[in-house]
Amino acid sequence: MMVGMVGLLLGAAIAAPDGGMAHSMRIDHRSGTVQSDYTADVRVTHQQVGTVGAGGRPSTLRCVWRAGLVVERQARHASGSTLARSFTHDAAIEGSRPGWCSAQKAAIAQEVARRDAVLQARLVQLAEEDHPVLHAEIDRMHGTTQAG
Image (cartoon, rainbow, N blue to C red; front, side, top):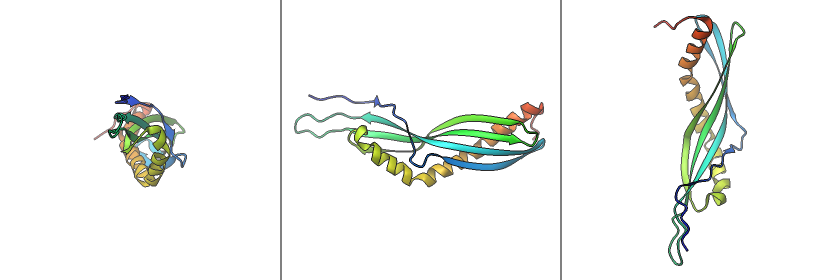
């Protein structure tokens, strides 16, 4: 009997083995300096695709996975105000492995851990992409608009 597993989303999300990442930066704004601290947890999602092969036929089962970042930003303005934001980036790295997702989770977690430098670089990039958002939040907080 052939069991169809195409597109079965397992919905499993696991944290990276290292427990998270961090990045800090200072941003200059005309109303004062802002210290921004970004922390991120890695979330891995698994999707089972393919079918089990019937007697004598090969299986097409694959586990497609994506590792993304769940980012928390805490920014402290020189005035003492705090600006917080949470956002996600769903596909920092991705891959697939043959077989059942349930049997591949440990190997996938190891692969994600080996690619920690890629994830850390993506966190830095996401922090830089957050600058315009943070500047706009500070402008709103101080009742000003960004010039030029």
